Amino acid sequence: MAADVSLFQIFMDGVFIKNFLIIQFLGLCSFVGVTKDTKSAAGMSGAVIFVMTLAATVSFLIYNFVLVPLKLEFLDLISFIVVIAALVQLVEFVVRKNVPSLYRSLGIYLPLITTNCAVLGVVLLNVLNEYSFIQSVVFGVSAGIGYALVMLMMSGIRERTTLVNVPSSMRGLPHAFLIATMLSMAFVNYFGVIPL
Amino acid sequence: MDPLSEFIRGITKDNPIFGLVLGLCPTLAVTTSIDNAIGMSAGTAFVLICSNLMISGLRKQIPASVRLPIFILIIATFVSIVKMVMEAYFPPMYAALGVFIPLIVVNCIIIGRAEAYANKNNMFYSLIDALGSSAGFLLVLVLIGGIRELLGTGGLAIFGTQLVSIPINPITFMILSPGAFLTIGILMAIVNHRRAKKLARGG
Image (cartoon, rainbow over all chains, first blue to last red; front, side, top):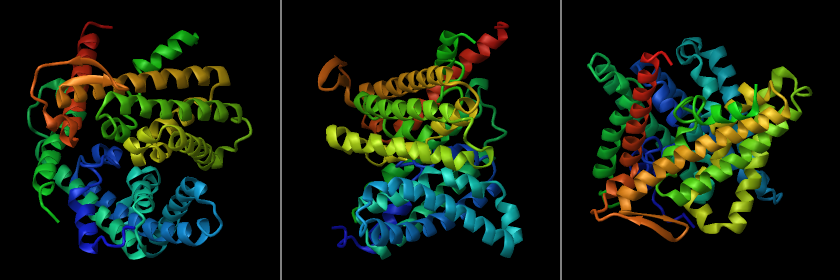
């Protein structure tokens, strides 16, 4: 059904037009939680790109080669969440064993990805849009890149506005949400009008 | 602990959105209209109440070291039920809420209440806690949905019945994603302001 969608369009959709954070509102907890400085935002983004790509790949295989042949599609949600949790755990083991420096810089963000709705969102949208294997993987990668892009932009802006004198009741989250308003206005207006 | 104050606590001090700042994704994504806000809170309330009851009932049997995977499995089961019921009986609502119904699984409110409350208290109080949190969630969602629908379309309608209409040019911006961020930012600033005033009075 979605076979005629070009890979380039899926990529642009994932990065800009249907950006996960500020157009579709997936993964907002980390968006307001870990964007206080660029370093942790970058660490979180790296981990999310990694897990998202893997989750899109593995869950496609599980859905199409295990659940569909066995007529167990109604178990999709339960199996996806278990797959993501297992995957995060696996990634944590591998990274800790092989790349200790990366493990230290990612810190607690790795286990937190299990409950990040952006990752489960990619998997569910892949099933919903009936993407093929290649399309699913491309969508996973591009959604991760879009996530990283917005996280870095947001944390850059928040770092530069830490010393700004805002009214006391606006400090913290309200301030972050108003910055997000501007960012998402830019995304809606610039990327919403490009015909693809 | 008296049940009434436990219930009120979920709406005021421990309000999922303004107090604990949990579950932001559905709050912003589905509040384009009051209808969607009510549908989403109904789904979340069902899952929250059932999972709180079940986890509280099983809290002595669940080993502490593997409690989180068990919580997630229990929650995922109830979410699957909500998803199938909504798909079968309310297809327009299901289409409007889209991917956010299955995403109730990773809604921090539910696992947060399970871990912070249902895991430690008996079934009666867990039920009261779930009802309170659901009521708080519903109120905030309806408030945000109402503001966005009123400004974005120039009127309010609940399930097809027109309630109010105001003579303004609809601000489409409010229905799109920037409007959601703007609304919640301003509401949160108002809540902070009131809280600071109350603190200054010594309350």
